[in-house]
Image (cartoon, rainbow over all chains, first blue to last red; front, top):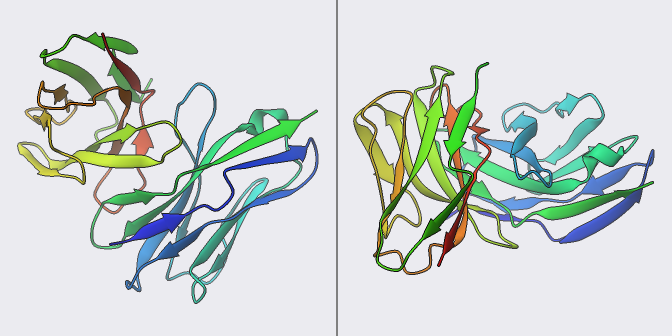
Length: 114
Length: 112
């Protein structure tokens, strides 16, 4: 079975600074997808960024970027120029290439302080 | 506006009662999913459907049932067999399997 581990239950960052959230996963598959979702206090799950495992280039989306280390099975999320609106729970998720099941980590609560 | 809607936002269930959570999407997505979220935990898959009139059990299907009679609708019934139903329920959809899932706003179910 696939497992996704987020080892940081809670983190804080000052507004405008950079923060990195960690995620590791365990799989025997070679092709898969990785995601970061954001869940603000409204509890709406919002896609932040997606990475295909076959792509060596790290995905970026405006202030959000990932550091994908396939051999180490690591998928960290970097948030640059943190904003108050970034305060949320962040979930790392894994999806097998040929199967549409998602496996979610337990989440990291990010607090952006003014 | 295109999107995924879930209703109601809050739902109360009495002991021994079945309740149904609604999920509708107008994105023309083929696949739909139901997840359960408990405090301090990630999402766990209850059921999913890749096409109309077909669905599969996820990791925690016991005590739940679904139907997929229309492409845009995927209701979830929480039966009396589910002994611990209090949770936040999220519905999602994707254009096809293996594609990014987009989520609805969720329904919080509480037991009276």
